[in-house]
Structure formats: C-alpha cells, structure tokens
Length: 287
Length: 207
Image 1 (cartoon, chains in turn green, yellow):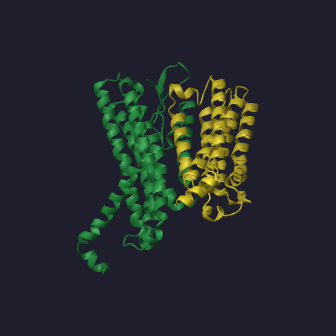
Image 2 (cartoon, helix red, strand yellow; image 1 turned 60 degrees about the vertical axis):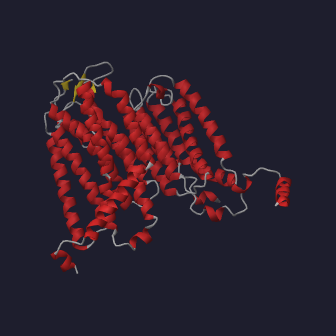
Image 3 (cartoon, chains in turn purple, green; image 1 turned 45 degrees about the horizontal axis):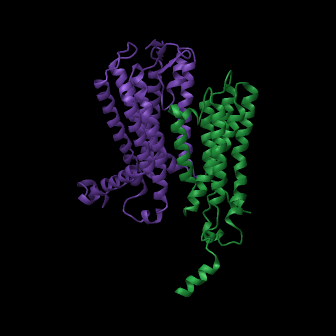
C-alpha cells in the first residue's frame, strides 16, 4: 500500500485531512480568549501610538512580541494540552500525533497573520505620520527590525507547542512564557555593557532584542551595534528549531533520524547567523 | 490533610523560577533594585500560587465531612512557599541596596499572591475544579502587560520611582478584598442556598 501511495498522488481525502486539521487548529487558536485579548491590546497600542511615532519606531516589534508571542506561548500550550485530554479518541483517528503536531505548528501562523497586518499598519502609519529619518539605520535595517516582530509572534506559540509536547507539567506553558520574557529582558543587560562584540552577543542571543538605549535619563538615544538582517535570520531559525523539536516528540524510525538531522542543521545555521549578527560593527550610532 | 493534595510540581517550579530571577536581582542590585526583573519574579511566584487550589479529585473530596473553607485554608498554607521566597528576596535586596522600598514591595507581593488565590477560588466556585491554569494565565498576562508596557495610570499599581505609599494602600485594600473573596468563594456548594429549612418544607408541600 505504501508503494502504491508512493507511486501515485494520494487520494483527495488524504490530502484533505491535514488541511482540515490545520483549519480546525487555526480556528481554535483564533477563538482562544487569551489570543483575542492579545490582539485587542495590540490594536489598542497601535491606536494610541500610531500618530506619535519617532526615530525609535524600530523598537515597535516588542508589541507583537509580547501581545502575540508571549500570550501565544500560553495559548498554543493550552491548545495542545486540551487536545491531550481526548488523546484516546484522537489516537484512534487516521491522523497520527505527528500530523496533529504539524497542524498545531501551522496554526501558529494565525498570530503571524495578525503580526503581518500590524507590520502593514506600521508602514501605513509611517506614510501618514512621517517619522523623522534617522542616520542610525537604513530602510532595509528598519524593515528587518520590524519584520522580527512577525517572527516573534510566530515563535512564541511554536515554543508553546514544543513545551506542551515534551513537558508534562501543569503550568508549563505559563512558565515557558515567563522564561521567554526573562530571556528577552536578560538580553537588555547587553545594552548597559560597553560597545563590544561581547556586549552585542549578550543582547542578541535573546529571542527578543532591543536596539535603542541611552547612557542615562535624558541622555541622547543611540542605536546599538549588530546586524538586524542576520538577527532576523537567527530568530527565524529559532522558530524552525522550536517547530522541529515539537515534531521530534512523536516521530519514530527513519523519520526521527531525519528530524534529528534537521535539528542539528538548524542549530548550526542559527549559531552561524548569530555570529554574523554579532560580528557586525558594535559602534553605537546616535539616533 | 488536603495540603498533601496540592500539586507541588507547578508550585515548586514557579518558585524555583522566581528564586533564580530574584537571586540574579540581588546580585545585580547596585544603587537601586532592578524592579522590572523583581516584578517578573513576582509573576512567576503568582503563577506558582495559582495552582494551590487545583483538585483533580474534587468530586470525591467534596463528599468528605470537612467544609470546603477548611480545606481551602489548609491548602492556603502552601502559599507560604512563594510568599517566603518573596520576603527573603526583598529583605536581601534591602540589605544590598538601601533604596529598596522593602515595605511597599512586601505589601505588593502579598497582595498579588492573595489576588491570584482569590481568582482561583472564584473559578472553583464557578465549577472549575482545576482553576490554576486559567488563574495563572489571567494574572500573568495582566502583570506582564502592565510591567512591559507601563501606562500613566499603572504607575500607581507598579511604581518605579515614587508613589509607593499610594501603591501600598492600593495593594493592602486589594489584598484584604481578595482574602474576603477567598472566604466567600469557599462556601460548600450545598450551603449556597441560604433559605431556612422551613422554606424548603413549604416548597416541598406545595409540590
């Protein structure tokens, strides 16, 4: 049967099942009260801050990072654990756990879609209420820093799925979200270090990076060093890593070996991206 | 008796995370404590406290001859773990940095932990036997949103430079109200109908 399936395209019902599963999980994600709360807070923040944009607009990625990414970690975790409660019935269905994990990971594109809408709105707002140009970053670097907001929004939920698959503990989702916030805040310590490659590494190893700071209250703002484009690549690879680690839980045999190789490759690529992001000029440029 | 029913894993995991963050805060504190990190640790402790009323065996335990209020009080002893972590950390911060508003932080921590338990008690009152997940999510989401994106009005809730007296008054009042809510929401389901027995008899006769 495997040979037959391999030789010809799968029947329409087989192709339909993963799509249906993704649709179901996406709808569950989109209807979750915490996700809706995060979206409401994001919209409220956009509404209040859009006409007051300044040169620190590159830091706006924190909004989707917290309201979609951090909140999404808990949402995704709850979706997985709620499905586990009906595991006996679900295990009897034609779709295996691995397929359901893939569907859940794909459903994490729901907050990503909201973040894309946020990104589009940011560009509309910048066109309507022009932001004073800053010599500290190019339009390409600004795009990379803002696009990281979309990646944060997808990455948090993917971590939630991975944690739910591997950690059988009540509250693991909330603690994972807190760990992500703590890791992100830990990265801001790099802003207080002298400008150096080590300081940039201390800041950019985190899954959320701050780029703007100052030497004290009322002092001039500066943009810290590092490559926004390579950092974007780094966090994107971290997202892939989270999804692959989640998938690893329910795979066996040759597929497991393939997934493990993918994880190793993603780790190496993420480290290379981080090194390239960090080795960029660490000089701080006034905004 | 029911303290053994408390799931120690989320309680200790949350406290461990909070302890690690607070230890880092104590080490890193110089002129003033890193309040953002200190409050992030408080979020972890609140998440830990949210699980103390979870009772997967509620259907069986509800039948034992012991009121829910007494069981709640017994379980509330577990609140001493996150509260102790908080008190020790605030005292350590105070010793390390004299600018630490120790009293206000202690009141703030006690208030938040009590509110978390009150929320869990309300959810349990509404019929949810394991309210920890929802209570932790709500409290943590609200706190993270306020800490990461402070608004002008949230300065009274989580002050940074001044306004500590107002904050202490606020958290004292909220904490006292939350304690009252815990007691009120811990009534046994069978005792919620407060009508006198005679009224029940009349109703039965009417039927």
